Length: 281
Image (cartoon, rainbow, N blue to C red; front, side, top):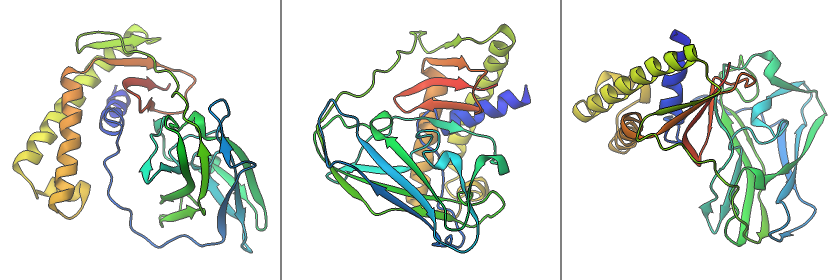
């Protein structure tokens, strides 16, 4: 029960509104020995052709390195690891957003000195190319565990950008949420799972409402500073806005839970299905 409750809090706080409440990480930049290069066999893509690039992650240093697998395209796009934009406007990320366990040694790809990893990546699986135009593509990440789960420094990887001419094409279709008039629905969840989720969702709603009321009345209180750092008006407004959305979602949105016993994640969603939550085993 406690684990389900933690999952629900994470799912509601992190993915119900499709945004993570974060503040910039601190620490020293990672070594420049690990580099990322993007290339493509063509510069123009018509609407019937997938937008694909080749990603090479190389270790140019003299010592072995490692890279967190889900922040690479090793198993497809598992996070918004690419910067994709058209005329300076970011393209919508359509891929998975997951609440994962903390990484362990098994989650890292070995990258020996002088070695490289190469992946062909279909960007149209995870980003919207609905409008025709010139798209700028880059790989850019800053994550404290990117280059090692024990190193709490701020791992960074970025590539030079490509510019590709892309003809617009429809986004993938989205599964509809059952009309439950603001209630909950379940797929592949047994009776005990449904009962646990009912309790956890009610608890998440209570937490969201309490946090929103606290933010309304305690602009620079100790809880804010503990979770989000030093107070400033812009940060406070962003956090309060996100908690307002979470509160609204837990109070009135039709939320669909899908239990996925094969998933390695605690929970995951897709940005264009914000109230459909997939739960792992």
